[in-house]
Length: 201
Ligand SMILES: [Mg+2]
Image 1 (spheres, rainbow, N blue to C red):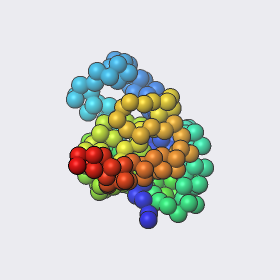
Image 2 (cartoon, rainbow, N blue to C red; image 1 turned 60 degrees about the vertical axis):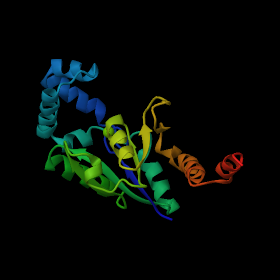
Image 3 (cartoon, rainbow, N blue to C red; image 1 turned 180 degrees about the vertical axis):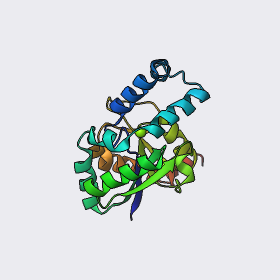
Image 4 (cartoon, helix red, strand yellow; image 1 turned 30 degrees about the vertical axis):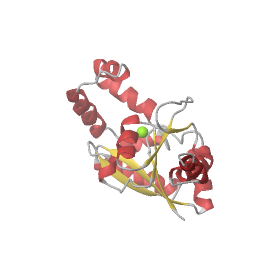
């Protein structure tokens, strides 16, 4: 059975976040500090999107690279034949969407790129039900889970107890798949569940 696997781009496949943070800092230092302190207002979010919109994405992508050997691990995942894979990536401009698509076409040609124009939710573009999303942003993962998807949190430092499956490298996806399958079995009435029910008689 093929599993639908969606990979976020910024902060999962490609290491753009340090450069994007620098761009925000240079454009508006106060906005940058509110972003770091997680106190952005809805107006700030609009400002931030505007800055990203005007950014030169060809340059951003050229001056950043794959995160934790992501392209090698995507290659490995592709070779397993277990996944229907795409990168599901938030974009603020057609320039951003175009340059990300070009980059993936060079680096991993079998990977589809599905741009999601901000501020639309990733769940409005594809069907999340039973599909896996690997993302570094909790907000996207919460929306995904709420729509019946399987959420995997990608972070550079190990995390736990956030309500998601957790990985620090795309290498770990195959291990997580075994855990997901095991959990699904339990959920669908495994022998363990049956034994518990029989205790009532
Ligand atoms: Mg991201």
